[in-house]
Amino acid sequence: MTVIGLTGPTGSGKTTALAALERLGFQVVDCDALYYRVLERDQSLRRGIREAFGDVFLPDGQLDRRALGDIVFGDPAALERLNALVYPAMSAAVGQIMEKCTKKGLVIDAINLIESGLGELCDWTVALTAAPEVRMRRIMARDGISEERARARIAAQKPDKYYRRNCTFLLENRAGSKAEFDQLIYSFFADLLHED
Image (tube, rainbow, N blue to C red):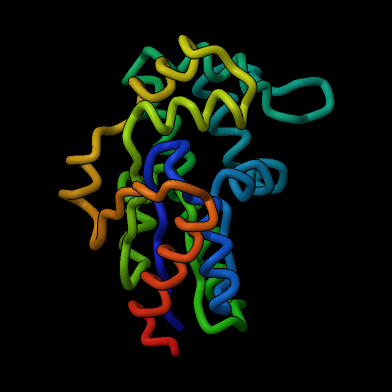
């Protein structure tokens, strides 16, 4: 089974790449969605978060994202404590999915693919990037946010050189349309996987 790790900054075209890999027979693991499923079931993770950050859970048991975000964003030590709790739980959850995978391959979609150690589970790691102005327009349109908020999100993310240094492949999305990028990214993965 081939395992591909997909990462890169928001607004760079990862959704299109994931769709291409699904068409090529891959199972997609969306680590953002998986995190919240793990958090619902993993009582030791919940307990660890509560002990480290106080009661950051809502009355219905869901994580209060805003409360936790207010604590960890802007405080590198707090974020490091959170990651030390979350990364091992995520690696275990992805490992279980890998064991049960019946498709020809698995693609792990994770913003923190390298930092979390999930990249070590992959045959290849692929980072998608795009010019900041392009990403800004996409983020604004997709999330309905202001230019200022979109620029702040982009500024908070890692630069392309980080991905260039740490990933097997770095692909810059320079396509003029979503359809063009879809064809380019499909061809890239088909060639990588030696598909006809």
